[in-house]
Amino acid sequence: GNSVTQMEGPVTLSEEAFLTINCTYTATGYPSLFWYVQYPGEGLQLLLKATKADDKGSNKGFEATYRKETTSFHLEKGSVQVSDSAVYFCALPYGGSQGNLIFGKGTKLSVKP
Amino acid sequence: DVKVTQSSRYLVKRTGEKVFLECVQDMDHENMFWYRQDPGLGLRLIYFSYDVKMKEKGDIPEGYSVSREKKERFSLILESASTNQTSMYLCASSLKDTIYFGEGSWLTVV
Image 1 (tube, each protein chain N blue to C red):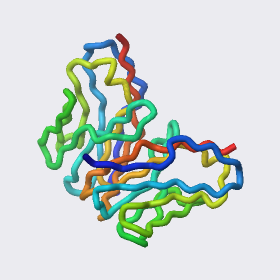
Image 2: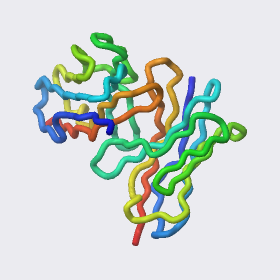
Image 3: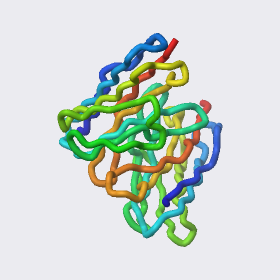
């Protein structure tokens, strides 16, 4: 079945630093890929998605490119802010028809002023 | 805007109590889910439902049951709460392959 592996955290950066959070996947076919974000004390929110190979998802300054050659979907941001401090989850469909997703373990990002 | 509402943000219950966690979505989605989230373990699927009165077990259904009498409402039931069920519970609904989450319910069992 499908699976996802993302880099373990925590990641601590200074404000305006460059961010990369690695995510690799194993899947049958070319499923949609997702990044979700969870701010402290809240549920998960969809951050961005890409639906096919070479697609780039983007939102709030974050980007991720669907790379089928390397089976990766790394999350990047050029200049992080304190408000980006959160836990980030990479995800892809479980493989069935019920719309379920498999989530990575999450990477906690802390941005210091 | 997409809206998934969980009725209780914070609950404290005693061991052995029956606990109901309620979730409502206003998007007419077919699929709904209950996850629990624990440090170091990520999100784990408890149950999901793809239609009214239909339910499927997820990865960790033991100790839980669910009810879906109406399309917009999906309830998680802890028949007899135990301390190892202390966790954050997340309800979600989905349209095609995109899942939308509620804000979560923090349950402490003492």
